[in-house]
Image 1: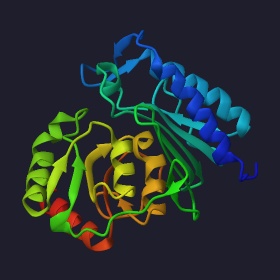
Image 2: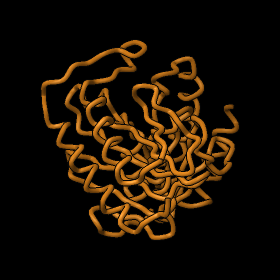
Image 3: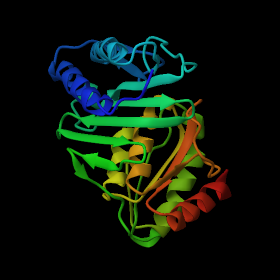
Image 4: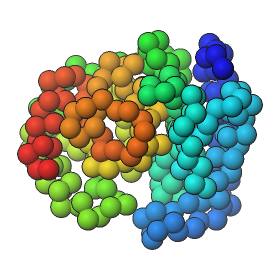
Length: 260
């Protein structure tokens, strides 16, 4: 298989078609592990559509997806998919939810597509080719730590980490401008890439939550690492921190390390 320049526009087209499945108000909700972890019939429909169309686009590629235990990360090219990041938001009618599609080659993300249907914002990136929203280039802001906004959450699927998350968030809040919690990782990372916020922290995320958005962050000039400040390998779930510049990342990392 050879990476083609047509992969990104074709993937964007497939994602837009998949988003049409989210417009229905008639969907079923099933718990996967309590009220905080749910799946809708729309999640399943979107994932099925994406896998079908993307397998045609790139034959013999693997898939690592949130639903149906479809998690094969062993292929040379692997699509990493979250059919709806922010399922809880989607199920309750909140706007903050997105379709996430990333293409991994060995340990690198080559392509990232994040689509937020409610605002019609299509975030895209290809490795070494920049990041865009609806084909317009985006870049992180130049704000310092004291003027930064951090997007974050309290690890809703692992509430045993609530206290440590709260301590990190409180400590950061005292030193930055403000905090936001939208309930969906990918849109928040895209907002950082677009200069709307400058910091991001979550104690533990699934691979499909951050893979596609991570490329958008780095191609927009930002930095994203694990909680030790190490480069992401896209092989496993991980804690995530991100910032608009190295100085802000190091300040956030120092706060996190103090509480771990």
